[in-house]
Image (cartoon, rainbow, N blue to C red):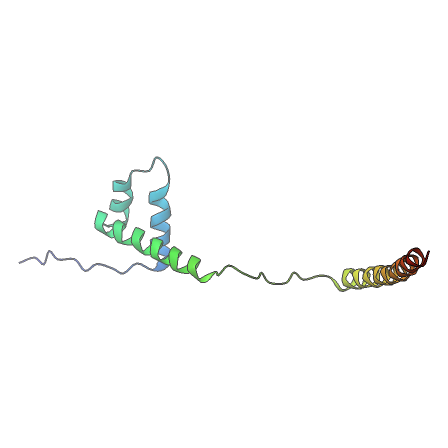
Length: 108
């Protein structure tokens, strides 16, 4: 007697992803892809479900909120720091001038 039951091989994640991509291309006959890889339509359904679950799980891990701080070169940071100090100094001078003018207006 012949043993007609074949052992099904386990596909790696890379193989499943490759088969999934191959089946999702437009104009591709899915039956041909499945035959080429020795799979059934139920195998493809399982692969599609696994791809969807993996994508949803991965997307749910990326939480909205604060983004990571951008990396700024040291030279640019130092230049921005100097500009900020100059502007703060100018603002302080203008505040003194404004306060002085305000006092003069109220006294007159």
